[in-house]
Image 1 (cartoon, rainbow, N blue to C red):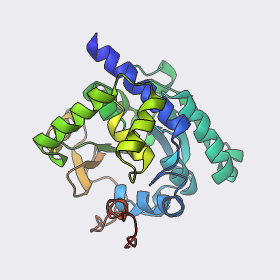
Image 2: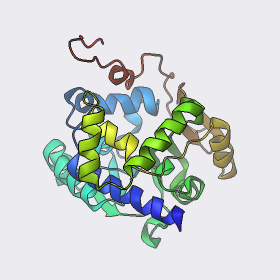
Image 3: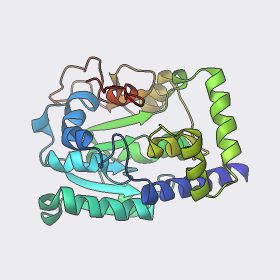
Image 4: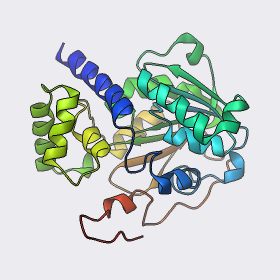
Length: 286
C-alpha cells in the first residue's frame, strides 16, 4: 500500500512539474541546451556517428516535455515519444510544433500516454533502432520490471540507452538528508511545496529543485547491478559512455555490430556547465 501511494505521488508530481515548471537548466527553455541537444546525443550520450541516426526509429521512453525528442528529430529520426504525464505530452507536442515544425509536418513524431510498468500490446509488439530512457526508470517504483518491459523493444541490431541515478553519487548522510526533506515536504500540495522550495533554496533552479525534492520514488543503482540486468536481457556489450557517478549506459546485444561508434567523451561533460553555474555576482565559466 505504501509503495503504491509513493508511486502515485511520484507520477502526480511529474505531471505537475511538466505543466507548471517546464523552464529551467538543460530544458528547452535554455538556449544553450536547445542549440546543443543533438550534439550532446551524438558526441556524449550515445557516442554514435551523426549519420547513423537519419531514418532510424527511436522510442523516447519517458519523454517528459521533449527535450531529447527535439534532438532526435533534428538528427532525422522517426520518434515515438511516450510518457505517463498528460501535461508532459501536451507540452511536448506544443514544443515540437514550435521547434521542429518540419519534422512534425513530415509525420516523424508520434506521442502516446504509457505506463512503463504496463505497456500496451500495440507498443509491446513494436521494435526500434534505439530505445532511449533518460532519468525515468528509477522513478517507476520497479526499475528492473520497467527495464524488462522496454528492453525487448530494441531491434536485434539496435541500441538501448539508459540514464539512471547512481548509488555512488551520494553519501549515506546525503541520502538521509534528501529522504528527510522529501518526507517533510510530502504532505504539502505541489503549489505550496514549490513556494517552500523557492524560499528554502532561493538561488536554485526551481525546476531542478522540484525534481530533486518532490518525487518520493528516487531509486539508485550501481553499475554492476544494472549491467547484470542488461546481460540477463541479452545485451552483451554495456558501455558507460560518460564516466561519472551517475549511470550513463549504452547497450548492444552484439558487440561486433556495425554501429559507427565514436570515441567516448572527456570532461568537462555537457551537464557540468550547470554544476558550475555561478551564485549571485559570479561569472559563468565555460
